[in-house]
Amino acid sequence: MTYFYYKTNTWSSGQKPTEDLIKTWKHLSEKKNWRIVQLPNGYYQTEYKDMESEDAWNDVTRRETIESAEAAIDGSVAHYANKLEFVKGPKVVKTFD
Image (tube, rainbow, N blue to C red; front, top):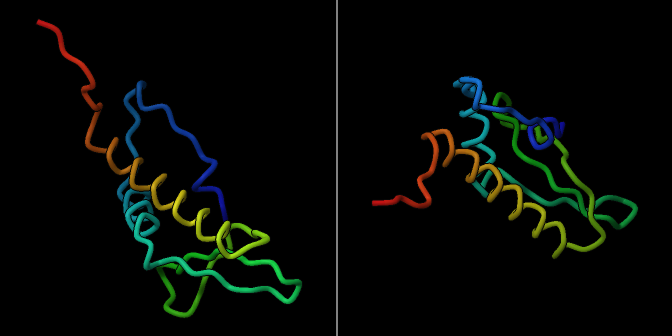
């Protein structure tokens, strides 16, 4: 299930992410909730732990090497951490006197 990654929102119209969505982003922004498994065809699959079930994992991507699979996880963790930063509101990048 990868809809979290590809879903976009525009907050300029006043929409804010729901508490459930923020909770999901927090979960996905922690590397401990991710793993890599090797598939029978030799590829590596990245998965994240399901928030509702202790034993369930959701597949996300498939990569040819374990290094590229870990890089994909690192990118996803950074992506969701960045989303959490903007939940706090707009980031001031420059002010003028």
